Length: 277
Image (tube, rainbow, N blue to C red; front, side, top):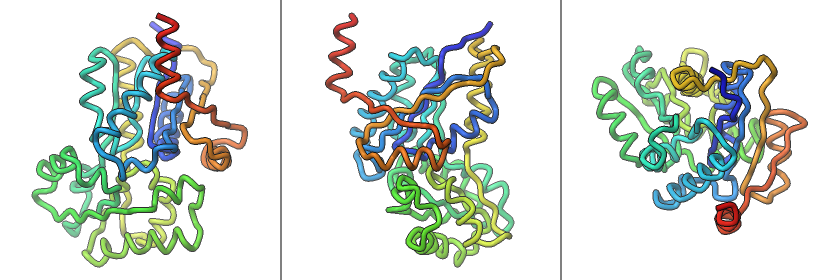
């Protein structure tokens, strides 16, 4: 069986492009629709109810475009909305993500793991459950990083301001003797080289993008949903922000010819659905 329908991916902004990069490397023939909710970013500053509402809206938009699977390329949105989305669409492959606490605790030699993440991720019940399950035998030092994802949204990956901000978050982890640092936000993966430089070569960095791509592949195979055509897959990008700078960020992080289309508002989206029913 072969299913050429696209995979839907959404994130609070452009951070999920780091997950798309892993998906594209593993599944080069799949078509993808990517939604960046930059107009409502950062999710870490919003309530669980708001994040859940946005996640439902973005998922409905992607399913209106016949997506065969959804990837929640955001730790905060996964914590807030994954269960709700799976209850709404129980037969749809929905792949979420969470900070890589389990592999980090297995990799540490010092017994100390650092986690860089958004406030929304760190205060979630899902993250607390991760710590209860995998963090009992090691010290897990959590570091909220306000302002960091906004640096990535602006494409500022190695400015003096970004470097100083990131250093202020990394140093407490190093002072606690962390030898493994979890990049607990998809945006932070684009800062990986800078984190490594600040942390030093003896500190291992871990993120979950490759694991998400592998799980997506397993779900597509199990459901007979893989695209078997040998043509290269396509990407279509949508965004909820009208900031023209976001196209420049997309082209910097993904491809110089890539451009965003503007997502409809929930009101216009619902009106359009009503006209079709």
